[in-house]
Amino acid sequence: MGVKFSEDIVPLTDIKVNPGRVVRRTKESHRPILLTSRGRGVAVMQSLEDFEQAEEEKFFMRAVVEGLSDLENNREVDLATTKIRLGLNLNP
Image 1 (tube, rainbow, N blue to C red):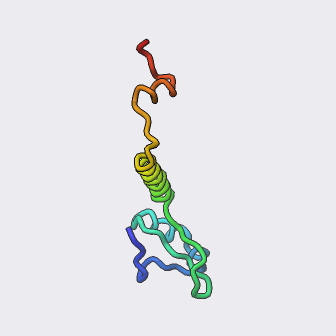
Image 2: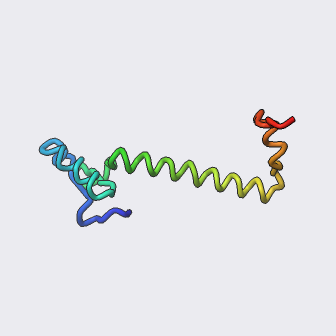
Image 3: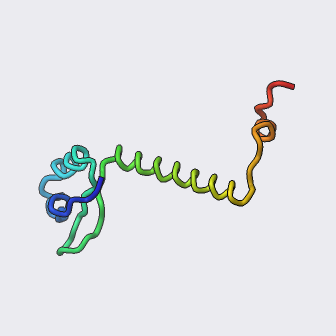
């Protein structure tokens, strides 16, 4: 998914004239739209579904990077200790 500058730049006036068309375009294309005012970018519009997916992917990637950093810095904990810390040690 990337911005196609030939298609994905919309003046703010288009939002005033036909907001449904612009929103529908973000949902159908699964690409963000750059909103402009006087030829300058002022905001980005994207579908809620795509926004939520991007946020989940960022959260996941941050967790992966943090986990890799923990491994590199010897901040790992074995499974048995983790279960005890989380109160999951059901077998006495």
